[in-house]
Length: 360
Ligand code: M6R
Image 1 (cartoon, rainbow, N blue to C red):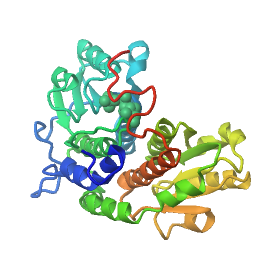
Image 2: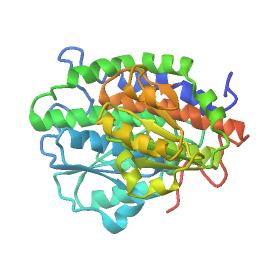
Image 3: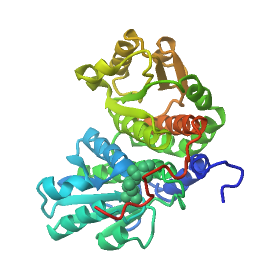
């Protein structure tokens, strides 16, 4: 049941310290300090020449997170919407690794993409929450995120566990391709270790309910981020629109000036996500919105330069840039939840949506 919580969504948001610890457990080798994924001996990915992620919705945002992490490490990778894959899959050969990312393991669009990749001879891997799901059975290999059952239609804890799992996978692939661990692995490993506790503190001290109240009468809600903040901006907006029924959009920070800025007014709060990747540029983009009257809510550490400029602040801890966006995402999950609660929406079962989409 929901226990002390009014909704499964809030319960599942609050479960993240535990679900993240479960995602990480046993996946860092205590002896050599490298990422260990059972089933994948060191060198398993040595022949991979490119990685394609296929997924839908929130899982697509996690997939994009993983793909950008690989790109930043110099590995050729793309994230593709599974429902577009049948018409426009990039070329596949037997050195292509196709990773299906799906919480349920039953999403029809994602299964179709996986089947196509299998048929074309790619090596396939499913990252899922459900052991024994169709996607887990049909891929060559499977990795389980171990988040526990998620009842709320809005994916919350499973997004963060998918993104962490894909971060681990990205490191393993990079490690195998280079034959040595990435130089910044130590910082990532200590940030992973600290993450469950840091999310616990963030949940205890969040100002998200107050921010949701302050901006409740707005017309549209914008989310901007750069680098690994970009998939988080997309996810922040998806969560917000699906449970509040209010208009929300996520943009790459640098894209704001290429069109969306025309929509910006004092009634369009802008949530700006800072991950430590060219933050000065994102701050400039946020200020361009602020000049047009939009309130800016900076999602960043306490002593970040954005705090002095922004109208409001949602705090995240100082952490590795590979994980900062996932901390920001938890703040945004809470903002969506409290905004939907103020509007009295049926949070766990938004209209027109299903937890698992088994039709094309
Ligand atoms: O089960 P899947 O991860 O394959 O589901 C894909 C999407 O339908 C899903 O992520 C959806 O976007 C979320 N429930 C939205 O919160």
